[in-house]
Length: 131
Image (cartoon, rainbow, N blue to C red; front, side, top):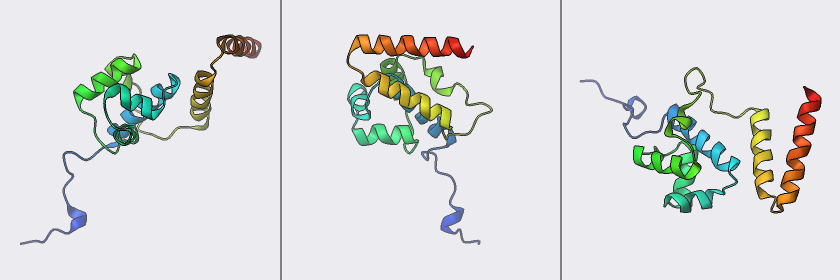
């Protein structure tokens, strides 16, 4: 009879996968785009801050019901979290994606609506110039 070492342990069914990490990354991106903190997100879906953090990092798996609830809070269909999964198993953000997320986070933190509109107009003008 062969002994099984701890390193040969079969993959547990509840262990998070690359897909779980990808879905968590998509949740984080959308949350930041909407300007929610992790604590606000946790409150909206009825979990602790720690649990929301684990979902976003792909440490804990998300049940189908919880993912549906998250999609409702973030205003996207459940399929949004899987978009780009095929052919793109890379879960790290590139520099451009980080910059876009930072821009969205900073924009959402601007409280003065006229300042937001001015910044939006400036971005449009710069984009038109580059085209």
